[in-house]
Image (cartoon, rainbow over all chains, first blue to last red; front, side, top):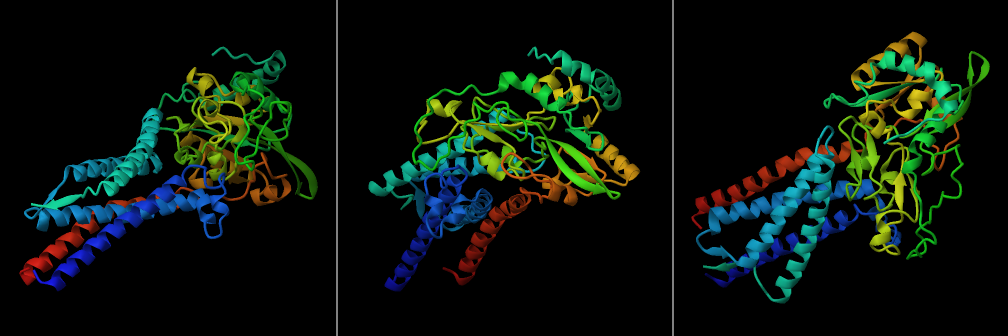
Length: 158
Length: 318
């Protein structure tokens, strides 16, 4: 493999990494906006951040970033299955974080269905969805920080 | 729950009750036995005389649900968080409060050259797709299968998001009560939100909501939504009147029929905190819900992009 080819692959990896991090950050930011905290704690008073105190805006933005995130993870999974299955294996921390992300996506998807007109989830199930969606995001954050500090990667070469 | 209405309210409402029962096919339809249909109420505001019998009955019947705050209230951090205390002002009946879930809104309008007072019972509209329920971060606000939206006082933290997202800003907060006191009372939450629950417990027992049962003028009718909508249109046609609540916020379960346009009433009524408007309302949940379709397309786009990349790689022999 020549050096130029290696640089291109490294750049692609960096693009994927930063896209993931920025997308997750924006999802957490707009998701936190679903709780009435940004107005209470003056964050929405910071110039340029007033939109964080607008529930309908953060709700809409959360959906937009969720669409980007779902497209992104399905791209990564399909790309792995089609072209990287033989050369790369997922580490245990990768499986762990992937499992958490799956939980976040499933609970989030069910909450989107809940918001549609005529959806009939039981109130207790909705509480479970709300709390598990939040709990899983907190778990993902903790796992992400732990993996970054201990330099645990998502994948490794076979 | 054994809830009694006073003798005065009872006498006022006895005849009206019989009429309402006959008119709406209650209690079968009001009990919400048919899970597929939401229950709606029709308010013929020509009939309302502003006697406040409904307000009084609501307060009597729902008295046990009212907050009993613990005082002194926890110190709030930061200071900007407002303490909302209505416990010393429980007698207020000219607006919505945690202790007054229904009030009579008054408007002076000109009808055929005559200055006329119109009185309108105002409470939660019980939207078909209620933003207060759908956007509550903890699931404390819930919608029952019969279309009633109610706030569970055991779970609500009083963040007032439901009030902010409600197009009419109906729910009202009482500080010093509820779950937040057991979590982080100074830093998160601020009490419990209260609003009309359309006497969900009475309806479950096959009874009428108190405001309907007691009304001496038979202003309100309750029944399955499609029947109520049909009735509202018939009435509007008959009196050459106007409808409010059918399409507001994507549709509500509180349908007003008025002899004067609602724009005119909206201008005439006193509006503000605890005093909801009567202007048109777009479907607040519609914009985000349209994106739900894109959420179905997103994984297809992701798979297609990766497959395209794979095809390109295979073709170039990488």
